[in-house]
Length: 462
Image 1 (cartoon, rainbow, N blue to C red):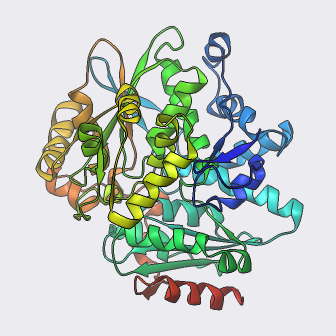
Image 2 (cartoon, rainbow, N blue to C red; image 1 turned 90 degrees about the horizontal axis):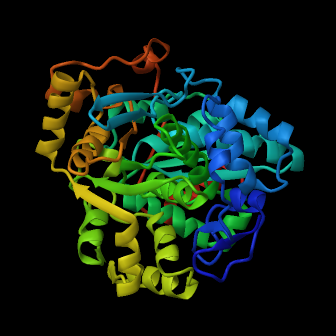
Image 3 (cartoon, rainbow, N blue to C red; image 1 turned 180 degrees about the vertical axis):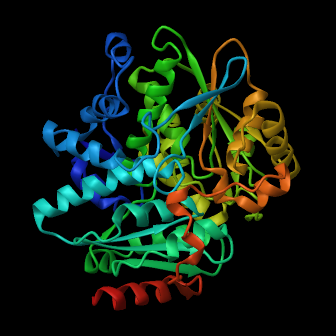
């Protein structure tokens, strides 16, 4: 399996190389040269299978000979051993033809655990084989950082630096990043918003002297291995509702587009998905783009669903690559325009391709809180604000086709917003009950990439 850049000028890599590289050297994102497909019988055979068995079937065609079958099965088993539900991603019914996919039973109570636990095990296996050491740098709006730290803490071959916007994540999210005591973990609180952090990470990857000098690797959703691991729960949920003999739709609360792009990959693999619905909060750039064809940044407005407080949505570049019929030069031109002017206009043909694949909706702060209130009262479900955004948008797209809304985080990660809306204080699981008793360890930094690079060099002795 060969991996190519969305911008068309970076070297073609193997899965292992693409996984360890993260961002392509031309600034693009890696994708498989071709998307493997599964026929109806292969999908049908997933009925009754364990989550781990489905993960092997879905992911193995993408990884080539990077791991043997036995190695990959061991990686999968280790990745999901710490999840708090045997089904890994269980589903509950909210109403007629509307289902909630619970993706918050992992170690850090968010959907990011599905991918990060997997990629942590894959990194460990590949690096222990090669004897190399890497420096992982990632940006987070809350959940990616805690999931990355949980996956890589204490590993011998990795130093992990997570940049998060100072004061713009929940207390639980922050403490999940700042309380681990392992020496290879570094939580960096950066002045600015998530886009400030994400831009700094991209700048570091594009500084090849720095990148090569510290052996930089990325685990944000720019890393295709992350997206690939998230494809699995589209299959498990759709099969439980009758796929491949029944079509299913999905609504996904998303800011950085990785989680819904995983649904696009599942659809291209052969899963019968009717509609992929993008659910946004008041930072609605993805919804506005689907409405107008213009991708125009307007600045981030802090919300009660902070993991979606994003304007520069990295994985949307992957969607553009397919909308532009894999024309890397066209994608590069749009990304250059975005960097220079803060906007670009999608071509008519690409816009029509996006509209044929995705629908979208926007949810205000008041609507988010109202949805939490109503879901608890009428559906018996206590939703986190992000999941509430998803459920609200999904209700506008319900029909004859079953709709699955992705519940991306446990309500206890956002206790203030949930309690204000529902009157119920969501408790952390017993295994995390001491989170607020542990000392915090973090470094506050300006939103300046040179200052951040200096700290990274100092910490690893480069």
